[in-house]
Image 1: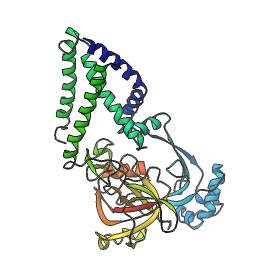
Image 2 (image 1 turned 180 degrees about the horizontal axis):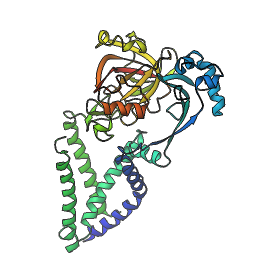
Image 3 (image 1 turned 45 degrees about the vertical axis):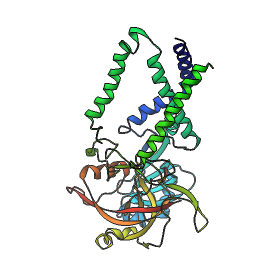
Image 4 (image 1 turned 90 degrees about the vertical axis):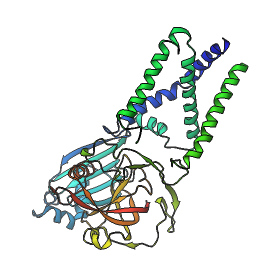
Length: 203
Length: 207
């Protein structure tokens, strides 16, 4: 039948059109699917450095580290910057917890130094976007909203078409009436089993 | 493009349009989130980090807010800020360091707190913590869901939030998660469960 030939042509052409976005969504999909294992958008590096107690940094007689750090916070911050080789002042300085003085150089935890007076240790924390994943997730999760919403909706329609047309273009015993039909049933069965097994039928 | 192909595509478009029209009626009964609507909910498992034993407490109500409900505005002082939820009113300001001591007295009361954003839930963005400038290291955890989602990258910014005070119980696994992942000091170390003062936010400004 001619409709089958038309379907093959459309399936092919729509397939090529969707190649880029399918690859993007597939990579992002795996990343987001494992969100319980990792932060799919950012990687956080924490580099601990032994810088010494507040007394050692300030060159004063030893005392209660927390109390000394608070009393001479300004001078302590400048000593920390010097020891860590940091140029420029932090945007903000505050106590994140009773034993953690936080110097924020860039918001979003992109560049933060935590100093723990009781341990004499500084932690240089840098949170960076994961190359490629961050960008693909941005699209996949529609963070930009706006026009991309309609682009993504159109892609969903295209995928729908690809699924239906793909099922119809092969005839005979390898098509829907034969092996293809069995495979399709198996695929639907996986969905049903997933819902049954994980309680998705009545979430 | 042949006539048959055009007919097929038209039929497919009609099918999709028809589904959309039929879906709109049921959406009135089953709320779903769109970018245009304020906080709406979709039920999800309580925690996307995995088992609750891993210490996740991101969404205590077991629901996910799927619309940010955050907008960029110019406040009365002429600053460009991000506003989550409702605009701030005239709630009584309370120092963060005083919250723990006055928790019972303040429970259920609408208050305002102000400070530095020290931590946030990166996965569901359903809470953040505020610490004051008083060097005490005291913090309050501000629960933003269902009112709004914490804007990404908020750690290190200053914020003001209004909401009602509550006291919640934190199990040891969650306390461990807060301490290790978010660097939060937890009260009553080693106790079977710890009590934590929280603010259930109705609105917050970030700058």
